[in-house]
Image 1 (cartoon, rainbow, N blue to C red):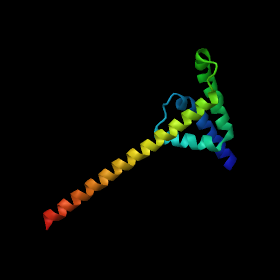
Image 2: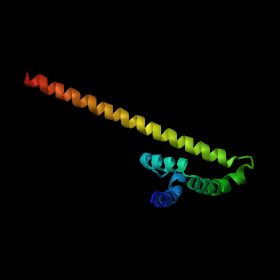
Image 3: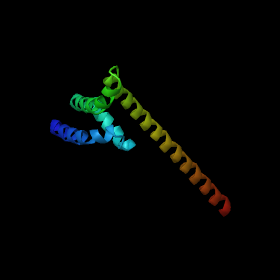
Image 4: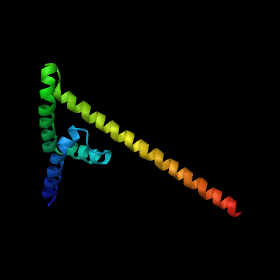
Length: 113
C-alpha cells in the first residue's frame, strides 16, 4: 500500500515540476515538493531532466560552460532559503500577534481593576 501512495505522490510532484521551475509554488507547496524530491530518486531524476531541458536550451546558446546540475542545485538552495525566510516571517508575525494580544489582555485587566 505504501508504494501505491508514493506513486500518487509522485504523480502530484511530476505535475508540480513546471510550477517549481517557474517559481509558482507557495512556500508550503515548495516545502512538500522539495521534501519529496530529496527522498525520491525517480522524481529527482525527472526534475533534473526537465530542468536540463528547460534551462539547457537557454543556457546552451549563451555559454557552453554552464553547469546544468550546479544550476539545479543552486535553484534548490535558493528555494530552501525562500522557505526559511517565509518561516522567519511567519514566526515574527506570530510573535507580534502574541505580544499584541498580551498587551490587550493586560490593558483589559488594568481597566477592570
